[in-house]
Length: 250
View 1 (cartoon, rainbow, N blue to C red):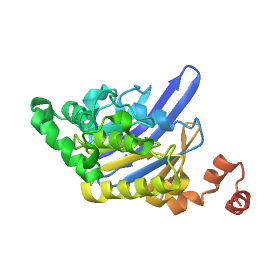
View 2: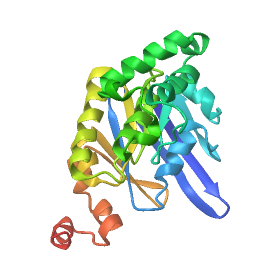
View 3: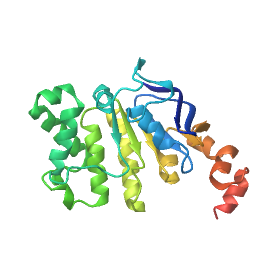
View 4: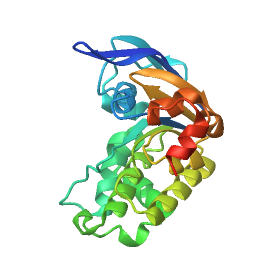
């Protein structure tokens, strides 16, 4: 469904991505992890059209979308959830999600009623219908993040790019978000590319995990396999033996 082929991006003399390749299928969660500065957010920026790669290609349904502007990428079916929610403070929850639905699909763009229907349906799925008339300024962090996610889902995308949605949440809220991401995968059959630093969440939710370090892919595969990979352990903890890592984490 969504593929990246040998994606390379440099900022001056710093190579943020070096020939990164990945793929994600319908109804699959691909987790992307790595130390700070590994290139994770740059990868999402390249896929979503915010940043153009120096080399490589992004394909959606086998069609090359490399370098398309973000609004075009969204219209084609790839939406984005930002780490820090960007909501319209003067609007209600429903209005915020309607804006995303309105600009995210051609049908909703032609019809305000269609945008409202898409927004209300998404808020019901998210369990936020009781908050739809509230100003977003009255929401806590978790609900603001959920509204941001609802805005990404309302246009009925094929793929959602999720950037550290667990950041700032407490353990109970993290568990709730894990369950929600599973529901999105299982009930909406949306593909998710998910950058995250909360290891428990990503290892317990993702179908596959890809690890970046200094712009390189150093491991990819099922979560348990990746967690036991010595290269991954060394990248995170500076030791190459998983047994040493376990002792270091106690």
